[in-house]
Length: 333
Image 1 (tube, rainbow, N blue to C red):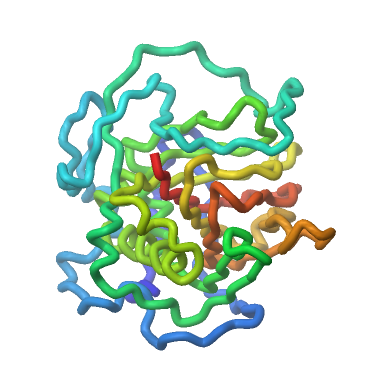
Image 2: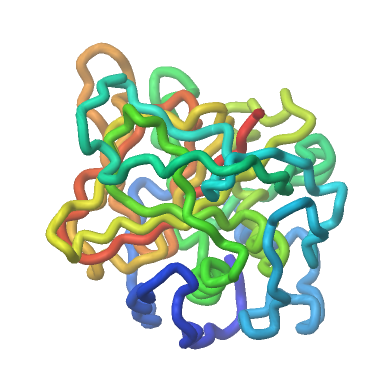
């Protein structure tokens, strides 16, 4: 887990309209289910902690302002970690949008009409060198739970408190970077009601230690269970800051779906469970023989890691308050 004292949530407003309510900073106890005690070392302890000047900065005001447009250089991201991409300019650089299993297309499914197409824009896309990372050891988390299915692709991994308060607040700060845009890459057949923002580039540029911790967590889970990442020389991390806001009377939701082309997906709860009602993570049954679907109620900072493109997943409706998550998909294409 990340170490160090937490810091106050930045006070500047969100660049995307009204600011989100700042989550409380107090610690909350959690109980893990069938926790397997593993190594006493946490992610990120493979190497000695760098001096303070090299650690992630928790002060957004110190971060340079930039936009991902026309392949301009991005401060803090090396060129060999980038690949050029071309998008329609709607804030989406993803080729691995989610799709439902129902393939129905009733009206009002996303709550918004698609905006008119805009001229295509050349943008950077982040890439992650899998083979290079797998040359170095991957350490397990301090505790975790394997929720096994009859096939490996049905297994998911619960990691309690993967992020501490400092890590959570750092993600909130990254979301406020001026490069962050709302994305609209969901399939038109997918029933959902949330707002998502693309944040992988500012996460990599300005929260490098946190970014590496999350990549290591996903790579470890894959090596322990599915062993799919080793089949690709590189993957494309796609990080989303997702807000389910039920304060206006309509529940936040997403129906059963898979994440297209995502070899591995991680979801981390950034809110405290007391801040919202509902919003329980759900997964397909352990088998096809009539078993019930599985539910996992995350605590603040908890993560769940799974085969995004293979394991059907969804949440129960968020019927009150605001639920915020960080989701990262490692896209194969």
